[in-house]
Image (cartoon, rainbow over all chains, first blue to last red; front, side, top):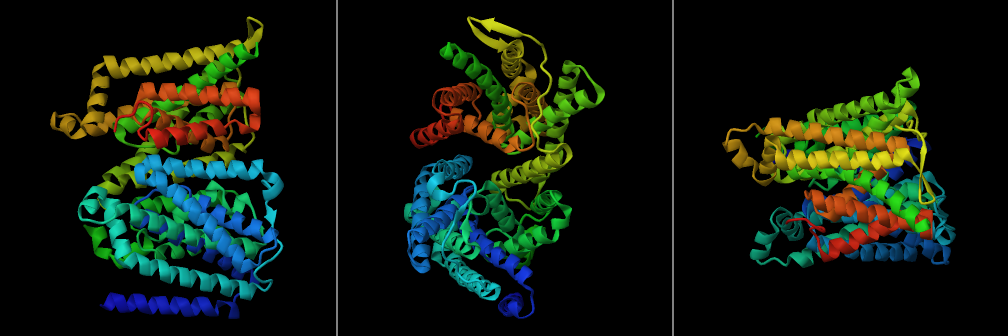
Length: 306
Length: 291
């Protein structure tokens, strides 16, 4: 009970602090945080698949990339931003369903590889159809969300809070429990009468929906969609690190991890190339010594001592 | 003429892929570890070999030896620093060990890549050929070194096959891949067996890395692609199956070479990916895998 009150208090404090940040933070840090919030949504939707459904998805950027490029292409065709976001999200959901098909048949490393291949194919396609997509340089979109860093920050913050609330709620609902049961023992979950296929498809669609929306929003924040910012495997790795650092199976941990990771990346910038090395080393140490992540440790401190 | 060229080039590349994949699949079969830092270990062997030959003027064979040793050291470090703590951890649930190994070796692979990039820069380096000269095979000029690479790869693969099938240690490895608990009950120390596997693995990855270094060259940025190709081949052939990996290595090697020569070099990686997806849909356990 006391821990619950404490968690609630921390959450409210974080919300107030986050919402009021533009009042004293400079434009530079607002920019870093804006990107971090979109990453937070990437991480939370990845955690729904990984932490709850137990699917090792190495290709979150496949879904994000579909959302970003889908939205960007529609915008180039003259659609207004909200419709583009929906269109991008729809593309991502279709991609998510395409990924769910092998997931229903393949386990662990096999499925992981298919998702990896999906990303590599998307990368190749973007480069091959460089005429439409801008190839490796990236695609400029005509519209942006806003040119004010404050408004952009609030868009991102609001988007992350709403997505986080929905995803967290879903993870605490029967859907989350059934997914967790399926991830741990699929046959037993089936024997208990749960429709495993339906729940897996739901998890993939929801994860894809939020990844795609966030990818589209990020595109309209930055004004471009490029391979390096939404599709590259290094983005997938950052998402994975964020979730593991923040705590698997907590949803909110992913957002926390993403913010900490991107801030650390920014603060370690003076190290030059070595900053990726340091961040990876810290994440590796976290996996080895703190496998439940920061939030996992806060929420179930006793499990770690077993 | 072009046909013969494709035949020879494809054979050499496939032999290299096969050597890289055999170590990878042995590691999975016996220890259950999918090492996503595989490419990093291969690149370390090539870069260290190149570095000693440039800095101290060591002969090509000496440099190759040092490179292979470097690969082994990297393999031991991977085991003791990354894998063993996970296997011994009391906090990580058994069921999730696989996911942790994948994530941890992925991070370790990035650390190797960025570290190598920092120390050696990411310019590709080519080690000196082990033997000079060019052979003329029915009009196709092929460096002797390429032929030597194919021969050495098959020699090493043959040696591993003998080790696994004909020796006492090999029997222990096979038993460990089938039933580790039974082996422990018979009084064999699993950690000793793991150490043997990591030694053999480091040796194979080191040799593959050095040979690659003398043939196509290597750079830190390669390591991700090398891991991906080994992973693809091993999954295509069936996890844990050595003959399957060898067949898959040839399928991928020839698919890439044919595409590069006849269609377009930029499309080189695509057919292998498509074959992989088709095989996984139709036969999820791979060509020769057991479930």
